[in-house]
Length: 228
Image (cartoon, rainbow, N blue to C red; front, side, top):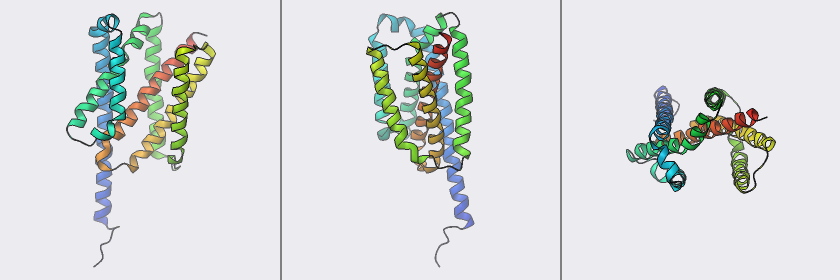
């Protein structure tokens, strides 16, 4: 007798696998955010003097962070090393935030801006995640547009290192970044339905990068608005 692919048992199995995958993704994502917060706390309170006395140390951390991202396809499926490497990545990312956090903490009104940026990031990421999970619109067709937009943002950001721009352009640039990673969040949350079961680390990393960059651009936007 031909097997019924749409039997109750098969449907239950698919739902169970999907539920398990989603639980893994959001659990790992939450742990990564917490690990980054721990890294930022340790760096800000115990390692800041080393970052000041050894400027090259921060560049080493940024390069390590970048290498872990581009090699993620090689290690993200290998348990348990994937947990260790992703945890190290999240911790390093928290450390790379130390110069930014130190600047705002030491600036008048900077702590308030940080808190506002954190709250705005949580609300915006949550709202975009809910939209991406519940919308009936297929967002996967905009993947190419998002990648090209991201490349454009990176190029403009690199140019800005050598040719500083004014505060008005900073607001525009940061605003575009906020919009871009808000859309990326919707896109990546909807994309969770298409991931294979063993790619939960990769899926969690995509969401982590979304909220990390969203926070940075919101902070830049609030800071630029505060200077008006």
